[in-house]
Image 1: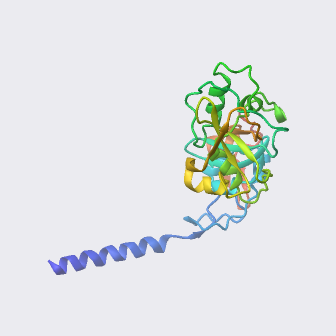
Image 2: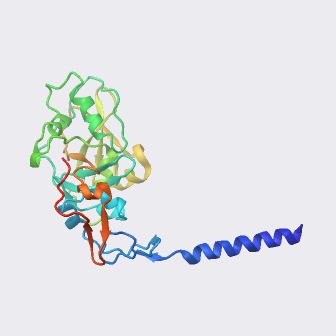
Image 3: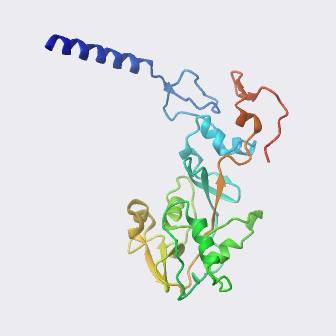
Length: 269
């Protein structure tokens, strides 16, 4: 029995070594100029210009499918703001405006309860829609100011959740310009008279960094009639406006860069 066990363990060890021997570290992103078709594990060495690829018409989804790491999209200007997070399971990228809305705003809906608002990521739009359609749409509010904005030609801005604000604060390589020691409204209600705010630049309460690591517990709350800053956000569908060839998968590698097999294809609308 012991001999059989020894032989089994020896075979397993050899198989494991053979498997590891087949792993090749390198850049396995097909859009990188140092793409290695033999690489099986991305070692983070890829050299690609994501901003340029996006400007050429590639969508976020097809770049992800081609091996680009989602983390590398953060901090890149795109469609009205800056990419601060990408979630493949949601199929969305989170775009943060690069500046605050002018002035300050009340949260709105004073003494009226808005049901269904949450603190999680990718809930800012649904929260905002709940607020502005809650029967208090005629009352000026932070959510309404964002929702009715047409900045840069986009009509889908919203008041973000605290988690979404934290993604912007934690975005590497980008100075988001949040006002130090200033509170910003989030789209989550506390009660009929109060809503949550999150604050930048201090550890006294609602610090973005603490919030990001611990969740909803680091919100602070304020009267809905209080006046605070607003930073808008919007979502982008990661499969929006992909190059047709990229969706179909009709790509070939010519040794330098990827090219469509049939030139002249347009963009999907």
